Every structure is written in C-alpha cells, then in structure tokens.
Length: 75
Image (cartoon, rainbow, N blue to C red):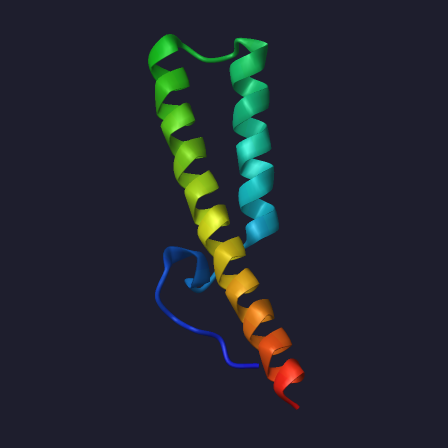
C-alpha cells in the first residue's frame, strides 16, 4: 500500500497510539493538579494540537477505506 505525504499525521515517526497515550497523560496530569496554571494552559494547547493530528489521521484513513469500498463495488 502506498503511503501519502502531506498532513503532519503522516510524517515519519508519527504514531496514532503514541499521540493518544500522550493526550491521556496530559489529561491525567491536569486532573491530578500536578501542574502550575500556566503549564495547564500550555499542556491543554498541546493536547488540542495532538487531537487535531489524530482527527486528520482518522479522516485520511476513512477516505482510504471509502475509496477501497468504492473500488470493490465497481468490480
């Protein structure tokens, strides 16, 4: 299967599961009150960016699945 380049989610070394784990870690630290207020905002912004990357990754994969299903339907 050919990998497409473009969005940051497809960059070398990017991993969906790793990003989800990082998001969960950020949420855990925020909920535990382990961070200063400024760090909470910084970490929240980081988590939002990771969520956007994950959403883009999933949208790309959904488009690929849709295309494959369409190809199968045409056969």
